[in-house]
Length: 443
Ligand SMILES: *[C@@H]1O[C@H](CO)[C@@H](O)[C@H](O)[C@H]1NC(C)=O
Ligand SMILES: *[C@@H]1O[C@H](CO)[C@@H](O)[C@H](O)[C@H]1NC(C)=O
Ligand SMILES: *[C@@H]1O[C@H](CO)[C@@H](O)[C@H](O)[C@H]1NC(C)=O
Ligand SMILES: *[C@@H]1O[C@H](CO)[C@@H](O)[C@H](O)[C@H]1NC(C)=O
Ligand SMILES: *[C@@H]1O[C@H](CO)[C@@H](O)[C@H](O)[C@H]1NC(C)=O
Ligand SMILES: *[C@@H]1O[C@H](CO)[C@@H](O)[C@H](O)[C@H]1NC(C)=O
Ligand SMILES: *[C@@H]1O[C@H](CO)[C@@H](O)[C@H](O)[C@H]1NC(C)=O
Image 1 (spheres, rainbow, N blue to C red):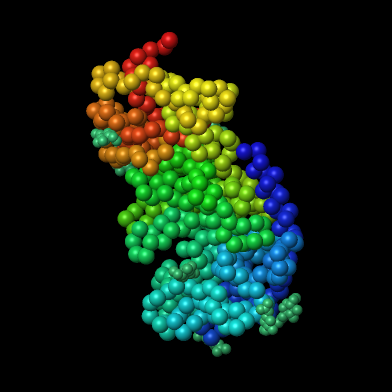
Image 2 (cartoon, rainbow, N blue to C red):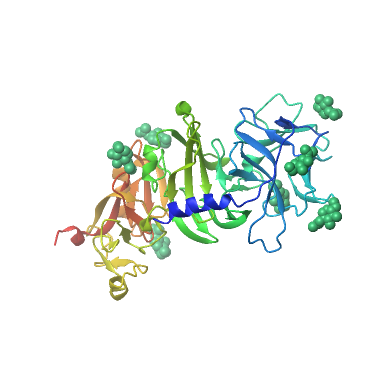
């Protein structure tokens, strides 16, 4: 979408209107159980390496209804510029309305944020041993952790901010879901506005119901964009990811958790983060030490063909055709009148019924975004030939594809309508769509 860039820069400009007050007196990266962090002391924690800073900040919007300040506990990049970039906010939906606020470690060994009347507005939910000696620490990667001060294992945390993303995915953070223990979903949710960190309309969430897992960008409960399934190296619906040379992508698909994380291949002092913008774009923002200006590296959805099911069932979107929606060969518009008026939402239907046997064939479509996989079935062991045979035998099968683009094995089979396909210039996948044999004969 062409709107992405202006909107993004617009949001940066507005950031200057956020009134920020903050000076620090002394800095370390830890908060012991006998210490507090208060708004009036102006103290902050600074991560080793000086990249991140944790403390209180306030926002006052020009059009704030009550004109009152709202105070938050958050983490931002420690820079000298006036324009702060916040990467995490503890009490995003429960601000302090008073410049009296205290962060401390409670008797139950939890971090707790108290307002002027000592009422907790936010706290961590660790329910282990009370009076466990704990220390809070801001790590070099921006993770704010609470750990047993006696533990020798520095990677074991009682609680960590990385488990509670706000709108930003930092390197080493995971987005997805813990499948064991109290189910914990890790999703990005946009700010409400550039000056309001409360939960906004847009979120980026991993769907974990089906065999394959895909991320969806939602506007409230409505799907706006889909990344396509992970193909072993990248998401099928983000073909340009193959050229993100300095980002190392990692998809975890294990018994205890599924999720995505990334790291920056840091030969060039490059920094990167993902952000769910309040304007509805998933942005990948990148900068270097020498050029600290934030550059938007990528933004999704990218064009109209990225919009979720823009063309209806059995159709695909192609930015190079007019109209952009096309029926798959062997299919015709379901509602010809609407289709002519560029309303493709009803999609396409078969021009010839399947015979469910010898009379059927497969149409190979290349450089495609694979259809939505929520109803797709996966067989990780069989190869393409067996995949085809399996599809032929199943009358409900509408198409198949390789699951793993990297080594050629694995089979995905669709048994319902083929939804949300598009054609790419490069980096797409092959899909084989079942059609009546006669449809394959060039007319
Ligand atoms: C707070 O606790 C830390 C570690 O337990 C200790 O080193 C420090 O001296 C204490 N500070 C005060 C003011 O009691
Ligand atoms: C904290 O910052 C405010 C605003 O600049 C200032 O008025 C106040 O004196 C500072 N407090 C301390 C303890 O330094
Ligand atoms: C803020 O706290 C002070 C006392 O610390 C109190 O007098 C004042 O009414 C409070 N303001 C609000 C808006 O709660
Ligand atoms: C703590 O648990 C409550 C209730 O389940 C939840 O609303 C709150 O968001 C949790 N707080 C954190 C910091 O996870
Ligand atoms: C990745 O870069 C190569 C070389 O510039 C280019 O040929 C290819 O089309 C790019 N891939 C995508 C998906 O843009
Ligand atoms: C095919 O779909 C129909 C209707 O959804 C269902 O009743 C039937 O069990 C399916 N057949 C197979 C082999 O999955
Ligand atoms: C292909 O990759 C899958 C998943 O990584 C693996 O289980 C399988 O053994 C690989 N197959 C071949 C032929 O290398």
